[in-house]
Image 1: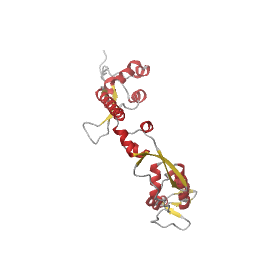
Image 2: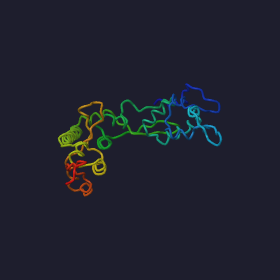
Image 3: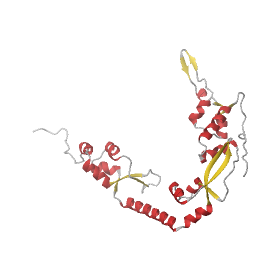
Image 4: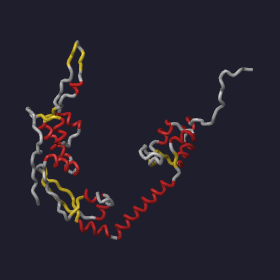
Length: 263
């Protein structure tokens, strides 16, 4: 196996006197810490000056350089990485920032994450059809172990009749579900309000999120259209006391004309 090469992050910037780094330098370097976590290592800035008992903050104050304690950031990154050592995405980002080359599992095997990225594998199918081997590597002074799967076994399962039947059945079920959604009668919020006596408040309270979003047929750049299944709408109209009590009567009432003479 290739040995892990652990180096400090390659610095394309200068650490300031006192061990500080600016926000822009940190942006170029990259970090796995969130903005809220970084605030714990930011040097407190003195904003504004007091004039006659009033603190005046200028634009120059707001644009002042933000400084962070660099050694503390490195330490926090290591601690966070150890807490989330099985997070593949974070591990890759950390190794990129820290310029670390770690051992990789043999090319004859898939990792669990690689299997799931193939599209048709799920955690349940992996556990049902495959046997795993363990792969260990040295990382940040410890041992990281994760399951790997022989590629020849994976491809053998994918070609098997049992797996094909399971996958094809699932594809057919999904296609049937999509067809059922397409064929269901739907209605827009605008028509609910104009034709069926709904209000925006009733829609939010009784219907909630739309059943389906579809592309706007008139304007491609417009926001997707929000649609509700009409059968669900009718069921609520027939059974909801809230709807019956607050339904807006859309029947036109006689228009009272002003300044009409009284007889």
